[in-house]
Image 1 (cartoon, each protein chain N blue to C red):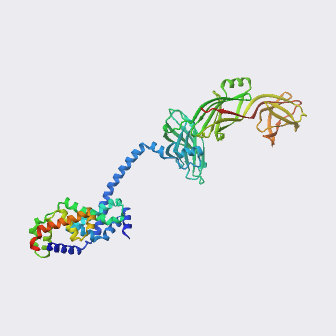
Image 2 (image 1 turned 180 degrees about the horizontal axis):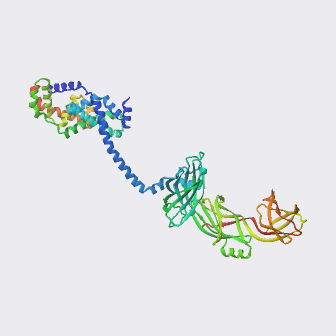
Image 3 (image 1 turned 90 degrees about the horizontal axis):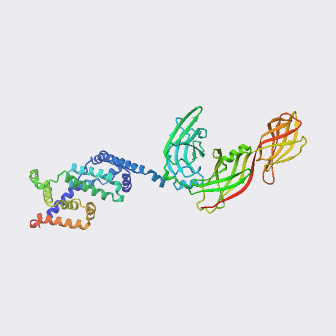
Length: 431
Length: 173
């Protein structure tokens, strides 16, 4: 046994003295360069395969992933409180498609949000030249059946290289699914069109939170305002109504007592707090005179809801003639409850001047002066001055200038626009 | 640069750092490979295999301090695989005659030893070489071969008992 131990010991000593080959380092480096790289390549292929698979799987479910995890980035400045919250919650559909025009201007459609009241498109207009406020860009949304026109607002960055827009469109028809965001860029006398196509994912539509018919009427001078429906969605609240239906409109037209609505001032009060007004509009067509007014979204813990008609301004047919004495002084005339004060009448350089005072919200339209049977058009209105009253309102004094003079004068008023404050409230019973 | 730093760099894919790590203990690696492979070329081949495996798997090494233990286990496995794959484990009994022609002296002694060892099973040869030629302690052998300390001890005991039985005997005692 000791012989073997001796041999082993000898062998150990031999091994201890063994020289490490000089080429060892070079061979190790070479092996790494040649063989490891080859193997790494193979694992790269594997990686690529895994990446492809991931893209396939993730791409297929991208909508779902986007729904749960994504929100629009960079729109904080543009969004109001409600939209910001919805964005935080990841509501809406991310699109992320870009169109670049030949001059370098680009439009990125970041995302859309849909509910029963509107379709919101979030897009960014970019101009690398820093003149984004100067580009003539027109955007609309084209569906298969219909084209939708935008209203909206945007915020520009300090460098003037981009504007983030929130564009609102009326909710698209139910059958519409694929849309083109149509863009027309006007530069000088050239124009270029572009489009971004996207599929609307209606599964992400947020529907509505409150939708009911109102069927309430408030009587106004010569007519009535009828509130038809209220529709609240997560992004906004819309109140729809009408002022005259087509029959009433036709009747008034025939009797010459038409009113043409001007400004309708409505307030929406939810839980005792006013809801911010966003936009509104009125139209006269075959449906009669209809109006719609949009407000911010309603609070989620809704307990009470009121609509307040603050004031209504309209253009009324009045067709009144007022006899004027040359010596008149502060003649007060009452037309449809509106006071018109005729301060004085004087002739100067062969022309006639009549000074009147009304509330600043009252405007006479189609004014003629009948001088000895001659009907003279209003030449101009001069010397405007405004006096703020201690109580409500501002008085507007101005002088009407008519060419020529006469013996007898009659002021012929065809139409008058005036605003009337109503402050009437209707309660909405929450169903 | 210390081992930990180099291992971290190697984990980031720095090949030079990996070579530097091996070269810092080049004699230990070479000796280990040599006792398995018995010649320079094969020993270097085994080391090449090892360094490629190290490079591809170093990111899995969680404890940087364990680099040398880990890499030596891989080297011994590479050696064994090479021996197995190339079927170059030639029983020394068959080349006895060649050996005798080399003559006597030191070579003779080596051949005698190899002859004794070749009578043992692979794992017993391995453990005797690691313990007595490479002079590793039990713990190092346990780490290298990934077997429990008790197994190392019992395996050495068994291997020695075989040697004693086959070649010991009364002649030498």
